[in-house]
Image (tube, rainbow, N blue to C red; front, top):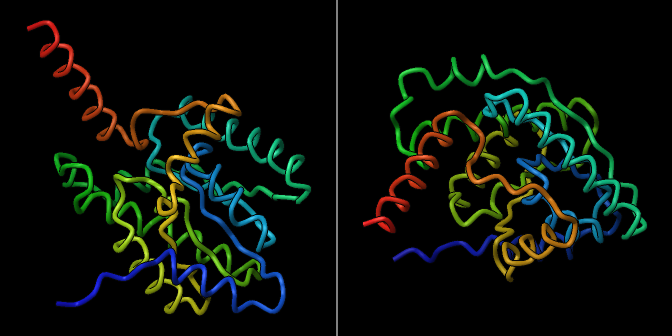
Length: 217
């Protein structure tokens, strides 16, 4: 039986191998998920947070999440004494909807999510390459609901194809997710209850409705 890869240990080993401070493009899905990632990575990298999430199909929701991301970066930069930069990708929900056409009923975590991950990682990798970054990675592995193995496989393949290193991670390890919740409370961050797309929002609303019915029953 093949041993499961420990991406956190691989990350620690890769960080220990650096002789200089590399530049890292960190794709972020939202401020709460980025909080621990930034706290942890700022000690080792010059970071630019790349906000590219075309899956967020509600413009007002998108703007709210961008604002929270920028606020967190400003506050964390001041606290850690590091200049964490911010870059925003194009907001193109039409592209996301085109990519996942036919998969609207696919449950969260399935093929629709894989396509969404690939879209965001490929865009992040292309941006990192075009702007001279040493590495790129994503905050997505901090979520207990996201498949770190899939994300790291996609990121590695995209990085190899483009010619830029993808930094494997599993940020939920070592209480990373727990710490992100603590930091979200500390900074008063908006914590959404769905990933971002209209389909995950519908699933979230259905779960809430079911819980209410169970309580009422």
